[in-house]
Image 1 (spheres, rainbow, N blue to C red):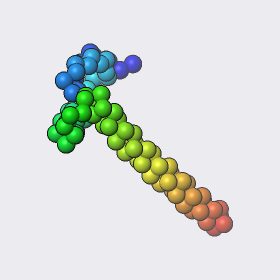
Image 2: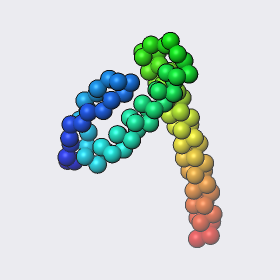
Image 3: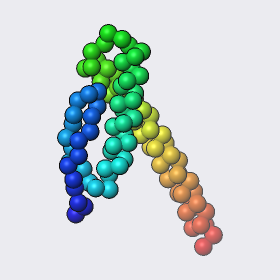
Length: 95
């Protein structure tokens, strides 16, 4: 079992305690920093919006990005699976 540590990160000025794997800490901090920077951009672009609205916008944007990546991954997986079947079929006919 991997060692875990408690860390604190900040998103939109809100302190968030997390328990993470030691090996994931740097990546998590990098992700939270990028999200916080995007939140700052949103707050400047959409002045007058409260933090909850800005966080909701950020959440939706990230969900859309994740969905696109999952669709691309599925397409690549299916494409590679089809090509592998073709190769195996060719191999079977040669043997």
